[in-house]
Length: 405
Image (cartoon, rainbow, N blue to C red; front, side, top):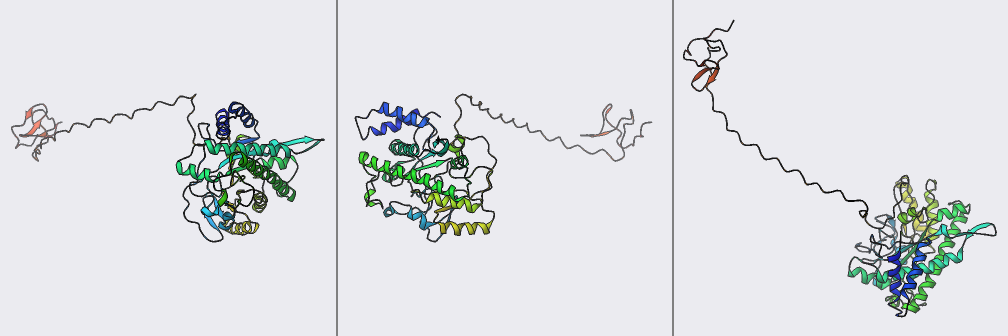
């Protein structure tokens, strides 16, 4: 996928804050950053331009320890703790598309860092390139914040709500490939510790980049009413969160999000432990599909998720066999290189058959006449009496005709 239009859009946003900015040079740098494959934007519409979808109406906030939503079960108290601007109201449920705490008509700019692309060999040993990972997170925040300014929104209400908090959901995929390369089992404590360190690094660099952008572009409009008001100004109310990345990850040949490798039989509890370790390091939410075996295991997992401090428990059917990967970036568009089949006109309805006049009622032949007495042909009833097909009307109807031969 080429990102020339997207890079030019992101670069043009800088001109709103610095009229001396060299948009052409900045677009070239942004284009090279996107083409490098270290970061994959998730806020791209079918036409290749920046687009942000917004959360729909979710109804009132539901009290209680647990509640159901489109993708599983969430915990309202934990979700409320992730909202940076509670003065405007709390999200009724996680957004079904991004799994992030979004209020009605609010959207966030989504992007993903390819963790497997940040491995390097140094002194004969393979490890994580932490400096490169931090640099990628910093560039990604600049790009995603610019997309909020130039993106297409469903309507004006979504545009106002999204720009008021300027939330970002900078996540990642390819954790399973990193653990496999380093020889760590997914359900081991060292694997969870490394995952927590990876996302802690991403969040720390993302927040630092947001603070730097606040000095250059001002803090987000609702900063004074937010929980962040006591600290340094922030450009974004939320910087990191793990949205579903199945489409972009499969297109890059990676495992989505923080899921284990396809085919690995990882218990649901180990998946939940990995989710808890990662979610503690991000601003928004993180989730791993759990695939509970039955109602009893589901209830046990919900209890453990609440005890671990998770925001939600994402359920789902067991994964299907892997097929061709396609980026999930909106509805499928017709290819410009394959002509559309011509629409065939429906066949014209056949005209109704002309109504046939009913045949005139024929008088039944007298009971005794069956054959013509002259030629022996069978006699048929006629309008004036018995009728021979060869001789015509029979004049001697009172006489019975013998059978021929």
